[in-house]
Image (cartoon, rainbow, N blue to C red; front, side, top):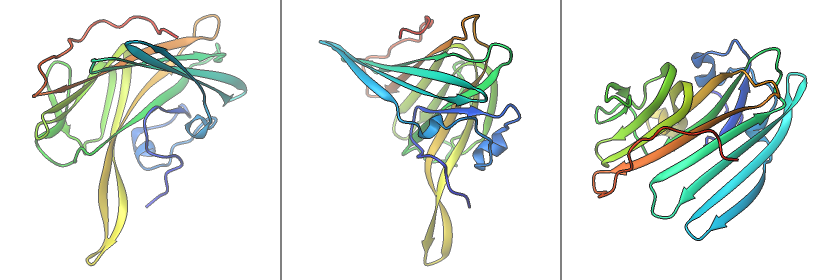
Length: 226
């Protein structure tokens, strides 16, 4: 049993030590650079009649540099697509850094054959309690056939992915037991910035249900709109 160092929410930003592995991350033993996972972000809200965009910014030390993280979340009226754009600034240009952002999907059980991960091409990757270590992926889908739910994650550049279940410890009449809480998905990248120390990524989360009469097709992603 270990204590989490941050709340298991979504859009949790992390800079890891270069030697970090999936086993270390899932066991809570990874080494962090800076503390963006618990940092306060300054937020501004931009509204239009048919959409809302929230832009969040924070700064913190990564190794010996003060890095700036800006992330924007866009949701349009009547759309089942959530767009997330990241821009990192003042990155070290002499070495890559390992950057991740964590998303947690609650209410989706693990160890059930009809709840599973799937590639964009439709290949089943295992139930939602599976630890996945995927490299250079363009996307991933989380499926709950019982609810008729499919959440598709799309990335504008090749993305590495870690997935693992999150459980809490509960005491019952039979003793201590693990209670499944969420499915953690961590897209992560070896970030190599441009000559100005900048790097960006765009992600789209497309939610579909069997009952929905409108399904938005996957499309090629552009550069970050921040």
